[in-house]
Length: 291
Image (cartoon, rainbow, N blue to C red; front, side):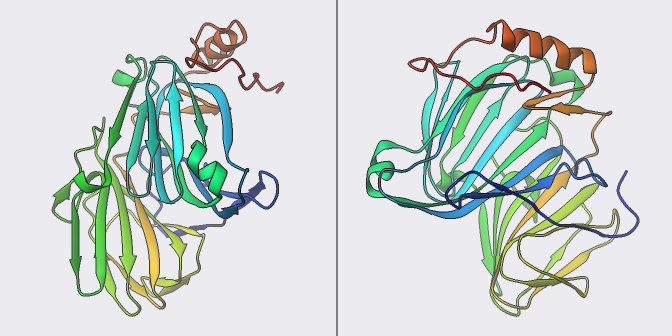
């Protein structure tokens, strides 16, 4: 249920080594999800020197779609369906895990050799009950196919779903709000109450949300009704996320999302027995956590 009052979520920091930071906003103890978004990580920004890159070894997912969106840098996605795709700033990689998929994410060779700056957002969207055991699939969308508008110091890009009179071509499974927002200093954006659940994440800069000052790297879960006014006190980059309420409780364990604990247990057993399949050309993998 949407909160009656706004909720401010502070990031929890994870150091992946050598100063490469990840900030986790969802799930949060007071707010497990916003609409279908059950996981929200802010990656970087980080300067990767020549010879260093990101290497996320093959690992499994069920019951969700992973959504990767970059501001800077590049990642190569590979999965057990045989897809290999480099994602660059403004593109969308949407991987539907459904009943099970394995994927890896690594820095491309050229960027690894030259050194580069890495910055982006990784989210998980829980699939509706009717689709949580669908066949897995992967879809890539180039940056230029996403709808945009610019007016009065406000630039909007609809990553997925529908907002501000625009609709993204990204395939979704339930009403979704996911918008990249850039505000010039002093610019104002009114967020309409067209989605049941809404949140604003301040990627960079500062803003006032319904008069409340919000610093960078904080998520502000909005009230369930009424328009909300955002004013940039400095030039700011924001993400709006949310959508329809989930159609029931979801359990999260490691990389698995499911509507029952029994389904999570089956996924654990399947990964231990290596029944998920493999990413072609890759032999290493992330073992099942001992917890």
